[in-house]
Length: 184
Image 1 (cartoon, rainbow, N blue to C red):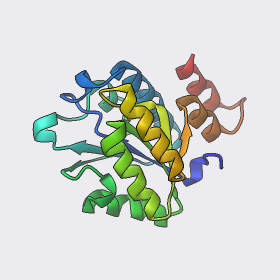
Image 2: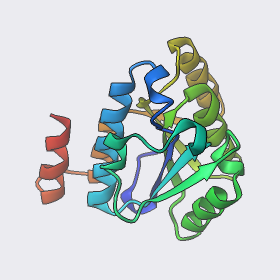
Image 3: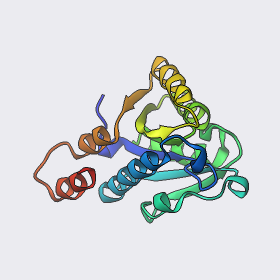
Image 4: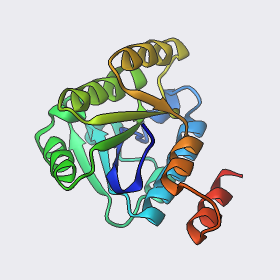
């Protein structure tokens, strides 16, 4: 299965100000999230952003917030899984009803909120795609454990570049020129 821009939606999980300083390689997560979000904005892919207990963990980090498309929806949650939060689940389900059945997930922490969200969306029958170089946890061991479990559950594991080039499908367009420049 390849990503298709006409079938994709993005769920950004908890890339928040008070959480990211504790996350391994947080600069990589923020950089790749920015690339993915700029791609989404350029290609018209809907974006849902979750914030776990924003009163305690703060809002989405500024570098990621600046890359959000203007129509991105930011929703708070208290549950670890975005898939069980009523407002988030409703938004994702409504987007799925319009044909956006590929849910591209990235954020933090890999072994808690990303994992539980992805597995929850998978249980609804969606195709769930994890952007592996745009997720992390406090330890690499936790990321490895999450990757194993997500793959065993049937989620797909890709990279930021894979997502961008699968959405683009080919070279020689203005979209290709704009988005390939982000990766260099």
